[in-house]
Amino acid sequence: MAGVVSSRGCHKIRASQIRDLMDSKLNVLFDCDGVIWNGETVVTGAPEVVTLLKQRGKRVLFITNNCTRPRGSYVTKFTRLGFTDVAEEDIFSSAYCSAAYLRDVAKVEGKVYVIGCPGVVKELREAGITMVEEETDAPTGTIYDYPLDPDVKAVLVGYDETFDFIKLAKACCYLQNSECLFVATDPDPWHPLRGGRITPGSGSLTAAVETASSRKATVIGKPSRFMFECIASQYNLEPSESLMVGDRLETDILFGSNCGLDTMLTLTGVSTLEEAQFYKNSDEPESKDFVPDYVVETIADFIDAYGEEEAG
Amino acid sequence: MAGVVSSRGCHKIRASQIRDLMDSKLNVLFDCDGVIWNGETVVTGAPEVVTLLKQRGKRVLFITNNCTRPRGSYVTKFTRLGFTDVAEEDIFSSAYCSAAYLRDVAKVEGKVYVIGCPGVVKELREAGITMVEEETDAPTGTIYDYPLDPDVKAVLVGYDETFDFIKLAKACCYLQNSECLFVATDPDPWHPLRGGRITPGSGSLTAAVETASSRKATVIGKPSRFMFECIASQYNLEPSESLMVGDRLETDILFGSNCGLDTMLTLTGVSTLEEAQFYKNSDEPESKDFVPDYVVETIADFIDAYGEEEAG
Image (cartoon, rainbow over all chains, first blue to last red; front, side, top):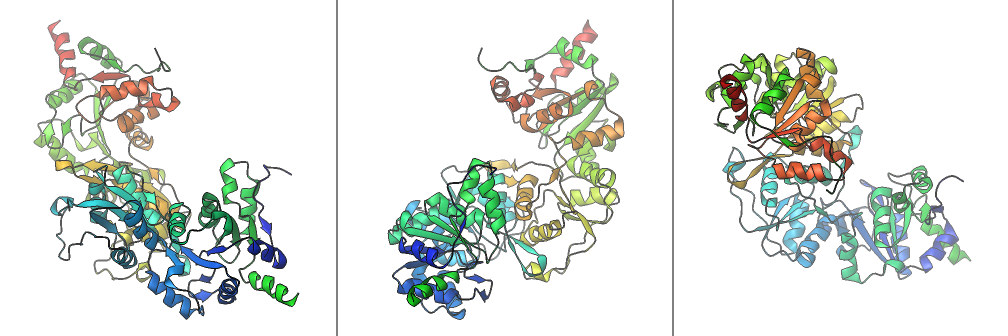
């Protein structure tokens, strides 16, 4: 067989194999979009899987790069889609983790200049972080006409539909100070919309700020380790006891690899089995980190796993 | 001596050496900012140098990545700063060359969606290129609420102080069509402003579009070859008969290297002799393209060169 043999399996597993895997794990980390739902459509069986895992004593957490919703809004969505037992503490969004990073890891003492949507601002406010107020009565003119706040100690860039040249210029002026931190919620370059359109993601806005400021952002969301460190600090998770389940090889599976977790690709979202096998067969040394240990058609396969157990 | 010996000299030259060099050249290409002026301050002696070279039969051209002014506005600036013999045809800005590229090289048949300042729009209009009209009565909403023009065949990104999320999203939606061209006026990441502030450059806005569209732009400005090809197509320049004079190693000198011109660094702008020598002594193979053949303190040294000749 051609290519380097990967240490990661890309094994398609079912029923009893899933049960055996779960017997060795305490924690299951699910990505949301493409894994438990697609937009407003729940993946069939997903609510039952979450309940089953919890009943068997597993800790079930949800890890999303989407920074647009505060955690309370996620709970509402879970309930609306038929999940009966998901609490705010089970949800880790890139906005929430960015707030935790700024407060607990970077320990920012001063203000944060935020390029971000209301969901980002709400998480920062709840974390007690002081932000620069946007001018309500904005001057029209060049960056010269805008005051810069001397107390800014960090710039945070997330998804922001009101992003404009002045926000970009302000962020870059703050980042001229090499002691000013530069943090981004997530690296997502774009998001698909209905009808073949796309919308720019946080990663796109971050690229503009990085280029103009000659700085590199510390990126919080998957595949960066920061998000796992944030979760681990709250729950004391052991990587070896945890499974990451996601639909994107370049974010979810790489995130699991980066953090030392076993990884599972589910085929209800973006990435395909063929893409996973392409990485597995690649000679590039970095490719192995994109190869999932396990593959399932859908997380509903967990139901069969435990169904057999009960039948047997 | 450590390091690879560069094939390029980084020779500091004066008077008779400048004259000898000029005897072997027909064309002198000057960058503008940092070479013949700094903002609104002319480099002492620059108008005389241009006149001297023209009197000796040299073709003198001006090559700038700045896309904000149409060529007519450059002529006004040259006159205001004391140059008496610079015409519109002598000036090649990244906006003018982008328009020429779209019309003559890409031969775009359809509309161009432009992210750019009025200087860019004016050059495109003068080149006879049809552009998408911006909504004068813009809807407020998401990218869904904006019409996309089905006749768009190219996206051009330049410096634009009215850049915003919707413009970014529109550009990316157009670029979903792989046959839609993607062109950027210049790669400049940022520009210095008075008082230590900076303003994002075209390269920053291009980085946002590149990231969100998963495409790479064809960049027209220095150090890309396109700008020289645009000039050569109008004046039939021979690279071996041409000298590029600039103040930035990473744009002007690299541009000259890329196009097979002899290069001269002048020390009245951004880059220093130390930086040039650092590149010369570097072991990195790419570094040699940043090393100028010649170095002068200021282009006013050309006056001494010809002054001696006349005295002798």
